[in-house]
Image (cartoon, rainbow, N blue to C red; front, side, top):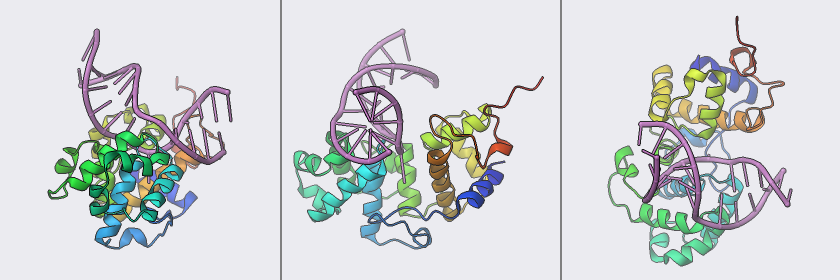
Length: 216
DNA sequence: GGCCAGGCCGGTG
DNA sequence: CACCGGCATGGC
């Protein structure tokens, strides 16, 4: 089922090419090992995009670039207040300034549990960093994933770890697949499975229970 | 002008 | 453990 849905989405939307670096989506990017600077930029983006549209995040990232502080050292040397002003367009800027400082000051090894101990990094952000920056095969669960799959079948209304386990046990542990699948989920959530769903023309009609009359 | 966006944290019951 | 309010800006 999980695999079938992946193929339906891929067939409909094509390869997405995530994560955008410097605003550019490049299908090749998810295959390559990233430089340290790229990993850092992706991690910053993952924090800034918490409950915020990517467009606003891009503005904040561009501000950081323009100021020459899109780097660990750059963020460390700014005061929290200065940093907050620079990232203002991303929303929750005071909160996110603290989160970026905490991440920049983090010295340990990059692993899920160490990331989760950083203030402001929860499961989704941690997994996004692991997957998109470090090519580590962990499936990223987000609000879109929850919405889409709970509509497909109420049995998929699971908590983060449970839903992630379902994906892990249903798919090859390949970061490129996880990367692509999550990108397709975001695309589909915006295209059809919105808050107010647009079911007409949905590529998942054949497998989705949403809106179907209950069987007798 | 209202609704919403690729969450997380701390407090409450 | 599940749920809720707070955090904030910009696009549609």
